[in-house]
Image (cartoon, rainbow, N blue to C red; front, side):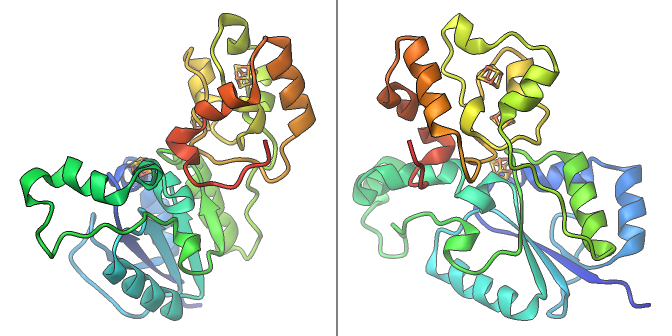
Length: 248
Ligand code: SF4
Ligand code: SF4
Ligand code: SF4
């Protein structure tokens, strides 16, 4: 049986999610043995236009990125968005909250008027092409990456949590950070990180994106219980929630 051909591409990002994969060391060797990696700029110099699975890291910020992504989509049977930059637009999308000419001046200073500099809105991958699977997080969880790829290799639909971070946080016996005045986004954000941030004493910033059907009424009850408003909570949803739909 032919091994599935896999290609990894990166757009605007810090490449930290790819680094999580590289850091898998022995486990990545097992995984690589089950596939045929034909392109992966961070790990090899070969390139290919023929692949079955395309893994996309990074957000889309330039017209030429969109053209490249359309081409990748046309060649891949399965397209996976890897990490918050790709699944949500990530931190890069913060700029969409401002006038893009101001952003350009802030970044490029006196060179801002040069014609080759662009002022496009940042997009998540699924704002440009259809995405088959999303691997969430900033950075991704390496174990979840392995589990999703293994599922795909045996033709099984990967299991991606559709319940909130609070479920994992409670299971770990963590004290709730709302009790200590931190507006943690755990009630409305997708689990799968094993409550990484609350377990270290930091609120959830929302890097895995909103769950599809957040229990809005329960979230509002919690907000009221602590004497806060929905607007207070929304003010904490900007880092990974810029220009995302939400129901609050
Ligand atoms: S999601 Fe986070 S870790 Fe991954 S590439 Fe983007 S900024 Fe880096
Ligand atoms: S700390 Fe955050 S994730 Fe944990 S239970 Fe409280 S709101 Fe939920
Ligand atoms: S706790 Fe929230 S911000 Fe932290 S890794 Fe999990 S989803 Fe991301």
